[in-house]
Length: 278
Image (cartoon, rainbow, N blue to C red):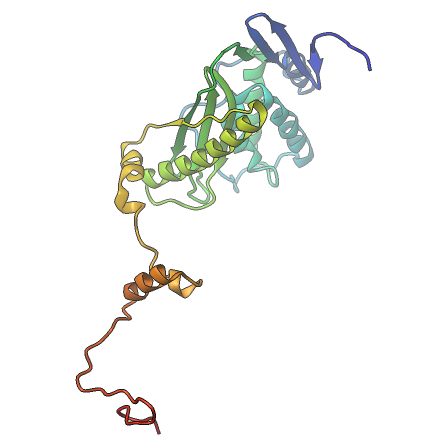
């Protein structure tokens, strides 16, 4: 085993370590991508996707080469290790890899132009003593023109350093922005629990509290309202065996109760018990 000193370059990621923290960059990798795409002589642009652009399948547009398109998307997705600012636009472009059209290829070229002007961008992690987790959750309602699904996004910081992030289309169609935000917050909460367990395993001490910030007042009110989270599941008795107290409680919920049936008589030791079944 050889000691090669501090890590400087690994699988296309350039690493710089110093007393105050560490920086990660993929400048050389980006430069190679731009060169291979023959975009080196194109003007750079400031954003990878224009404001309010809506992408769709574009069935009336011309097809573009699937092989080259898929290769470009695959190479660009590796950049998400250090360029989380591309998460949304690359997630959008990845939806059309099976049948790419002209509009998708135009947006792909804009992403490459954006990268040409931001070669030196990357991540910087500063040294910190604490271990507090803060998460931010958001969603865009009805973002997909084809199926009406919204897009979920969340990012978590360990102190001031972003450590995980996600941008993906929701699995179901929501009926309001409140519902979309609530679904996004649910996914973020699941991620927070996983991060708590991971940090406990790595550091030996558990982060007991995670702050999750949501910018939708309706979704916040929904999460805080005990009526929505204290509802009894009245079908429990129909799906599983229950303890005595729970069984009696669930039995009353489904309408089974002791009735006053007048002069109904019980039979004891062979005596009359009331109406017989014939």
